Image (tube, rainbow, N blue to C red):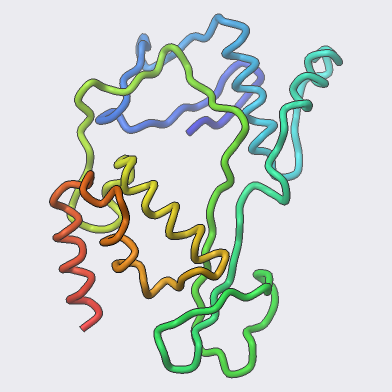
Length: 199
């Protein structure tokens, strides 16, 4: 995570079990113009309403940065899912976060997801360790850096959002996904824990 605090400095937070940096006393110096440009573009892409820049910034640079495509319709997707009667099924709603619940609906799920950015920023001073240490306590939230798991969850979320399935069918979807064999033994433990919680 990067947080600019001045025109010359930004705070960077990362998981040291997974990433390593070429830094001296926890300070990374960036001297390449293309990396500075990429970080500035990243701020533009992630800006909610305002972008701040020094008055000395050249017009050509500003126009080039603003030509980088931002996600359509905001930085994240937001969807409310209404529970149907007393069952386990949910249906997608077109309500925004400020609308009251539909009459008779007693519970909802809120599905949010970040949109993919058109720019992938990689700093030469930051790299992934050869043998990263992943935190895994057996819960669904732990294996955040398992690419196969991220693909499965992403595929499921997309199907829920277009109404092809509902959130209660998650484990059936996982078991039938072609990438399920790529996931380690934590998945079986997580499913057992989930089944116990639902009993």
